[in-house]
Image (tube, rainbow, N blue to C red; front, side, top):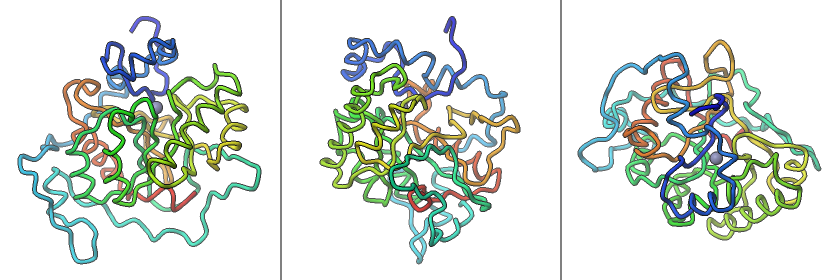
Length: 299
Ligand SMILES: [Zn+2]
């Protein structure tokens, strides 16, 4: 795309996508803010490193893979998705390392820890692939969902089985604007509006907020404080299709890193499925010897 910079990607739609939600955003002029945020545009530039193995991430059968006796996913469950099991994550800390002080809204991109753990997050909610539900039911890898109303409104029920697996639904605004270009009152409308909708739909008030594109300012912080979430959560790595984009120059995962991925399908992933993308992400994490822990246990 001419004139695009390789900014951090956090867009949930690509230009030309025909969803009603995208159309609404185009009409409201917000599309301007998406820049070069589609996953496909960002996928080519992170060094060309491909993940090892082209094992199928979409199995032909749809039977649930067995879990072992202690409830964690079995090796067979991982094999079904062309993966090997993760090392076990350590038990959640008794004392959370990120504790917001009253009246303060911390902004975090990672969790302070010396354990070899990372945190997986999925944003927006545009793609609703039943295979992803099957995959996460099989693998039992914890993750956090940051959902935007405009992206999920056509099928909010899709996310309930994912929530029932123990994964939290968090706030990612009503319409996915670039918060830095919005007034304080608009920002508050975006955060409080989605806070109310998510609480009503999913029965639990979000504790975390992620600003679209990772863009925020002090008015965002004030809006978050007024609307209920306690912490603003950014990220250290962004999963594309095959490759992970790293913010740090050493291009490695570090203990406590928060990884951004999206609910995306073939249209955004150059013909690849969401479960293929997720399998690629898990291989990157495994190759570096990390386990996946639950973000809400640490913040
Ligand atoms: Zn987003």
